[in-house]
Length: 301
Image 1 (cartoon, rainbow, N blue to C red):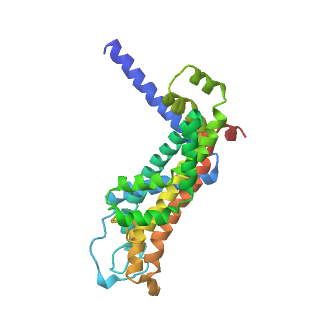
Image 2 (cartoon, rainbow, N blue to C red):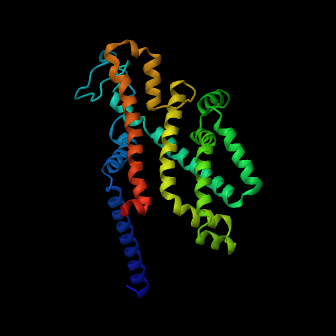
Image 3 (cartoon, rainbow, N blue to C red):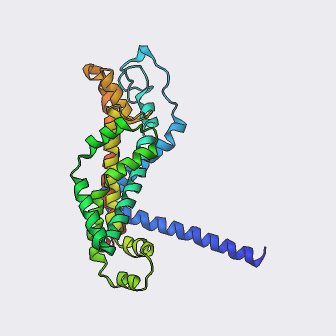
């Protein structure tokens, strides 16, 4: 084995060791807040449920008219729906769309809010006045009714298209918050030094300003995810988004097929509602620990 190979092997092992140490420190900080850590574990559980679960649990494609609205049993842990299909299998196969949409919308809307808010505060002048006025007007628009109208005019067959529309409709609130944060940070010595050295807006925003707002950005990202989930499920419930294998679709089917009028259909209605509520709760609880991970002052306290 040559010296170069030994050196490369050591470098790789050091990097792997560094990743393990960083991951261990992350878990330690996440576990400082018990409720937040429970939310983190719940979130990981939902991720595994929606990604690994469909490979282990067969999809419920075949109807069984002899097993309509059966209560939970060993064969059907969450009962059956109006066609005798297993509700547990539908829950397992119906969460990936919601998870992907929430993550995609959270990333895009947070990126838009950070970029516009930072540029507005750092550049100022007419750009700041224009963006602030636009954000004020944007905040007065009722988002979900407008989204419902847009869904009737635009075919939202692509997940990326729906995520972009949701992000564009939700950027204004985060923009104003980021703008206020950057106004307080731009007076710091390191930001003034970066501006004085003409290091470029990209470096100033993403290397100097953003790392000092990570706790706030993490919280904003989680709330953007929850808002996206509510909007998507609402559109699916109204039948405006043609997505399949979705918890919102299960609620829509329960409503359109008259399940609300049957006493034995409570599991068909409540299981997707419970799944959505628990997923939302995991995100909200997880935000407690994320705030401590990115805010050293909370850890020191």
